[in-house]
Structures are given as structure tokens and as C-alpha cells.
Image (cartoon, rainbow, N blue to C red):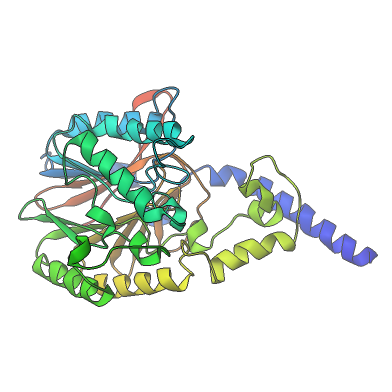
Amino acid sequence: MAWFITIICLIIFSSVIIYLLTIEYRNRPYIAPEHHGWKKNMPQGGSSPFYTLFLIGDAGAPSILHPDPTLTLLKRKLEEAGEHSGVFFLGDNIYPAGLPEPDDKDFPIAEKRLLAQLRVVEQHKGIKVFISGNHDWKKGKKGGFQTMMRQQEYVENYLNSKEVFLPRNGCPGPFELSISDQLTIIVLNTQWWVHGGHKPRGKREGCVVDNEHEFFVLLEELLFRNRFKRIVVVGHHPLYSFAIHGGRFTMKQHLFPLTSAHKHLYVPLPVAGSLYPIYRRYIGSKEDMSHPLYKRLRRRLIDIFKEYDNLIYAAGHDHNLQYIYKNNQHYIVSGAGSKVDYVQKNSNAVFTHAHKGFFKLSFYEKETWLEVLEPHTLMESGVVAFRKRMF
């Protein structure tokens, strides 16, 4: 018995040492070595982009007692970009479980969280779109569809438009937004694929497809029709991620798993504490990449997208900032609108950072540029944490 206790103590001690040695790194952005000179890279020619797109996800828990730094920065950047720009809120617009009934005790705080985002875009003359995420569908629980529909109605009424919450009525999509003869945006409702309760199907419920097969057929038709343009596909669930929903956990989460529920619950549970991360990585809930429903959607989309080197896929879901370049494909995770979680570095990751912020895509006549924008306490205009030419 003494040897077992000794081994456990050694595991705890070594884990704590590793955690302390790497805590500083985890607060810094990871940038792939070949891109360490990124600050010297700038768009050529001095021309202005013909279109600018902002991507922010998981903004559903903003500061409501005072101006939220991330949303304040987004509003400033939208004003600078003007009407030839758009913004997509990539789901999880209200934590923790969407917009409840008006007489529910949680309605006031949920409404304030949504209003904080709506007020950022209400004067914007360009495109503004909200996508639903798993939290907007009441985390996939009973009544999730009705909860999402309440949010859709609220957003549409506030912004006085039927094209601001897409795809409408909880349908899977795909929904096409043709921006110009050079750029198209395709919107997907990825939550439809993993939701366990009622979800709409077919034209009788306002959808353009009756089943999964028709969805993929239509998506391939849209991509092929736009094959000579630049294409941005947006959804809530990422196709690649080196964070929690991709099964990546910190040593702290293995050793002190209760801190995931409350940040001060430092109760050491070595070995037993690893069971939950292992479950999330190899079995998973419906919101994890390892779950069969999520895995099926993910594999099919990756297989379709690999035919197009002019395509960018952007999502939220994981609470961090990631730009991943894999198999000549561009993948963005922009889920740090209001929350921050750990993210690992990886050989396919060009940039990762556990920090609040959002992505900006600038489309020029012959180039497409990516920027990561983050709020800063000393700079109203924020900071550019990374920049890269994509096409």
C-alpha cells in the first residue's frame, strides 16, 4: 500500500511542476515557427479591401454591468470598415441555455446578454447575421427548438429583418449569401445535426431540404457554382480544434477535474480525474468531435471541402482563437467572444491563443488576408495578434 501512495504522490508532484512550468506559455499565443515574422507581412499595393468580414463566436456571456471590451472593439472595427463589411456571430449567443420564456426568472439576464450584442450591430449598414449554437438550443435539451425560435424572433424584431438569424427556423441550410462576383458566404446550422430533440425537416417546416442526403447534394451544388469565387462557409461546430471539444485537456484538468465546474475546487483526483478527459476525447457528448453524430457531419464536410482550395471554414464552439491549415484547407475557430479556455499547439496549427477576441477577413481584388484582433486594456483600437495572407 505504501508504494501505491508513493506513486500517487509522485504523479501529483510531477503534474503540479509541469503545470507551473507551462502556465506562462499557455497565456501566450502559439505561432508556428515559419510565421514568426508575421508582423512584416502586409497587404500589397496600398489598396482597400472590397469587403471585410468579422467572425465572432460564443459571445453569449459578455460584461453587462459595464461596456464589454471585446464587443466594444468589434463595434469600433465595424464602424471603421463601413457598409462594405459584414459580421457573423457564430452561435452560443446566450449562455447558459438560450433565451427562456419571458416570465422565467432567468429571462432578464439572458435578454441583457443578447442585447449587448445587438446594440453593437444595430447601426451597422452591412450584413449582420446570428447563427445558433448548442447553448441557443438549450444545450440540446427538451424545448431546445422552441428556445432557439424565441431568440430568432427577438433578433429579427430588434433588427427589423428576416435575414439576420440564419438559417431560419432551425433548418440545416445551406443558405447562400452572394456578396459579389468574387465572394460568397454559405451558412450552415451544424447544431441541427447533433440536436436530440425536435428539429425541422422539409418544405412544410420552412426548410429547403428534406433529409441529410439532400443537404449534402445542395451544398455541393452551391460550392460548384461558386468554384471560381472565394467561399467562406460558416457554422457553429469546428471541423478541427485543438481544445476541449477536440478532446484536448490540460494537466490541471486531469489532476484537478473539479476546477472545470468551479475554478477554486482544487481537489486532487489523480487517475480518476483523467476518466472524464478520456471520455470526452474518445466517446464524447454530442458536442464533441468524437461523438458519432458530430463525427459523421465532420467527415462528410471535410471530404467535400477538400475539392476547393478557395474555401475558408469558420466556426466557434471552443472558447479560444485558432487558425488551422491542414491539407491545403483553411479552418478558423473564433469562439472567444466572451469566454476563454485552454488550447494546445499542434503541427497543423498556424496560430492558437486562449484569449478573447475575433477574426477579421479582408478581401482584396487579388488577395485574402486574415487578422486576429484582441482587446487590450491600454489600447482602444485593440491589438493585432496575428496576420497572414490566405490566398
